[in-house]
Image 1: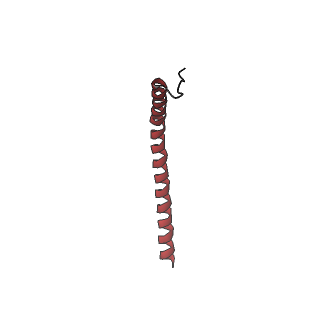
Image 2: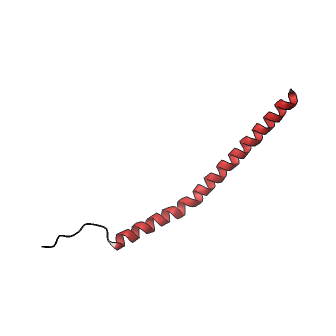
Image 3: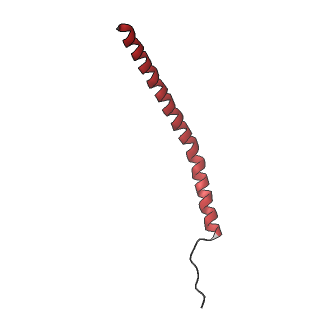
Length: 60
């Protein structure tokens, strides 16, 4: 009597790889957009802090 080994078939693995690829293709552009917005926010905060520091130094 042969016992059947349990595991994934090649088709199942290919489907999972395709789904992961589709999800990655959708997620990567959004991640890049969020990262760019975060960089812009950091830059704006740096400019505000620089202006505040300069005005404090001039006022003293």
